[in-house]
Image (tube, rainbow, N blue to C red; front, top):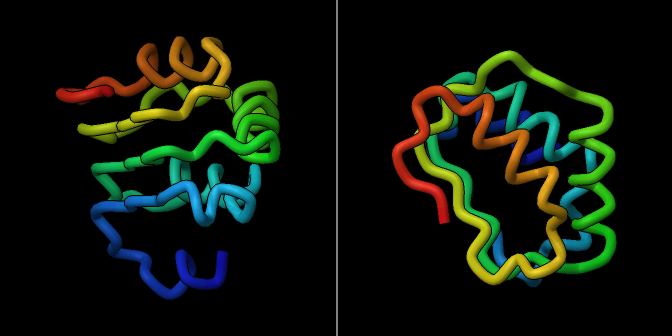
Amino acid sequence: MKCLQLTPFLQEFIAQEHIDNHITRDVLAKLFFGMPSLRTIDFRGCSSTSFEQSFHRLVQDSRPKSLLLTQVSFHECLSVPSSVFETICHVCIRLRNSI
């Protein structure tokens, strides 16, 4: 979380499975709702149980009207619930690419 706070103008966030246990609900909330310059999020291979639970809590707690992301990737994120995809696709009004 501290790294995200130190990079308020971050435009692209790429995570890999090595850090998925550290991506909490608060980190996801910061990425999706607290970084207005962010346009691309890639969760490449993140599929731990804690990652899945963090996303589940995020979509239960937060229902934004719109997000300005243009690219979102869940490549090989095998445990992410379908409700996450439904929520994100519905509110990403500028989404050009989703994997």
